[in-house]
Length: 464
Picture (cartoon, one colour):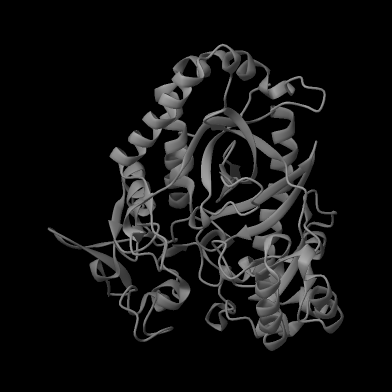
């Protein structure tokens, strides 16, 4: 918010004027009010392995993160380029595999990848869209310097927090939205429903019926599943509510079974169809993959998109973007060492105290080592893991991440953040102006995940 010379950065000027006129005790009271709103609304998430996992309240900071319109345009161009490249990459690896033939990506990295689904080979989803909803995690290291931290192309979560953060801020500080021209995020559910309906299968008759498939109330993101279904005005279903009848997926209703045309699934690939994947799955729908491959239902996101979340694939994203778009990547990757390569592994083991090491299939901040803050004992234990399964890890430098202010008892203090903008892909690419800002609430921490003690903020993109 404040530049090196002590003056407010341009996007924050109006907000800084307002903040300077506020009573600190009043703002702390507003912060407690926000927590009360979240508790009453039931905005919770689960942390697996915790005894109180069903009642975790996500921390919310009332000072918004503000991005100028000009800065956002540059970000949006890079995000769109990247999302289109990811979709082209998925279409290619499940069809001609030109990128492998060209030697730009090792064949083994695709074919031995747990997230690569042979069942998708030769099949093209309705409209040719694999990644209907994408969350791209971005960090900032300096003025106009952005890096993509990772791609979430399977079942990106957190959009409900983006929407609730905005709703809460508008409820508590209406005067701020009169004084600042903040771009809307509130129409995301409507845009999501329309985007999904646009890609209904060809055999769909009349208005497409959309439903959200949830694993159930014990899933960590169940609140979001029910929230989005409610906001879109569509059904929230579990696998037990659905069955395959006459070659279509149908939902049990009081009027009998009715056809589902588009299924926004929040169930992982392995559990989607017990006849195709895990036979012990009670979360999916037996036979849905046959219906899907016959072109009688749209599944969002498409099965097999999880390979784009793989952090080893991520390390090839500059090549992937250039291969499919013919242009250099607008948004850069964080430099990455692939521990599967002997020279890289050697370097990582020798520099563990300076690096962040992550599992290639990891998420939520689990299974990672932040070298600079780890103890010698922790680094030694992690080195043993690296040596035993080097293909399971990548490593990155610890970037000098930007900070934004959070409200503390003594006023404001800087904390590190990342940003997850949400992208909808159908007949065109729609990028929601803003996204979810996740903030590391612990001083000096670089880990922003809510499961690791992080919180969230409202993200403002200003009109020009």
